Image (cartoon, rainbow, N blue to C red; front, top):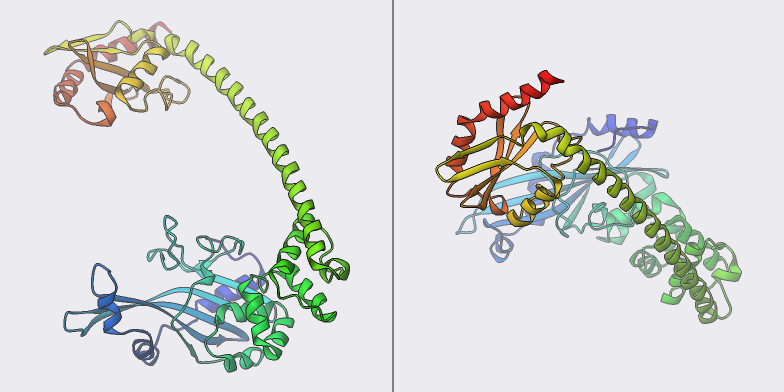
Length: 411
């Protein structure tokens, strides 16, 4: 969540809090235009529920606002409406080139565009449009748009019906060239929108150059050419590159440069990654060596403590090698998470419980108050001996406490 930083964001944040709740008329409109009982029965939700997205186009001050809502309509077996939920999920604020984006957060472990986190707050969000699927939900589809109030700047958009209204507003608000193109040739605008040109100011500049020179740019090779020009840092406003006489030749030439640059970067990144890995490995070796030397010094006062009873023997792990063997045999993280590192785990005492010479559980004791933090068998599961081991530890905790106090007294 982003807090308002600029004066524009603070203004929008204040106006956002003044927006009214959905009214009865708006809700009835959504139920009439956006949902049907048949849709709820056709879709495999846990309940007979139809989930639809709609937009209320309105104004606040001199801002054009698109308010996005999700409608959850519940039906019974007789296809009768039994309940509804209207969830505001997103707002887009436009004004003469300014743009502020509000939304809830979304669940990231899914590709679904409508996976809103219901309990999250509506707040200002920032981020790149490059990762549209998860980080930026502005490209979600919609069912219907209710145009309540439209500013003078956007009134002409009403003539174009149900296009991707959010995308159109963003493009027109970013640069007036898209208003011109949309009015002159809607198909040209649609091609640019489908190829993600309307969202990019650099590509918009290239389109202006192409139109000024009456160049037929609506082909895939031209789009790829401009992408590569931008990637290479070349002048995408220069007609020599943007409006070549031989498009395929220019496309192939720039593509070769792009491939060469990516190869150089790849080799450089690989070399840098190798250096980082080597430094990290040396740091781990040094850290591990220090931990190996420190562990016996810090825990040797407990090495003589042996707890026995009911065929079970419990002893403190005495070396890093024993931690490794314990973790390997028990399939848990006592070694992987470096419990032998007394700097990371200064208050942890690790013991191993064996039955007839076989490891059964690993125990962690907190030396601050001498209580059992955990006792786990293989794969972090409890064993049939768990209760016995815990009881033995509790009955003999004084032995650990005395060993600890003798060392402290000597120090």
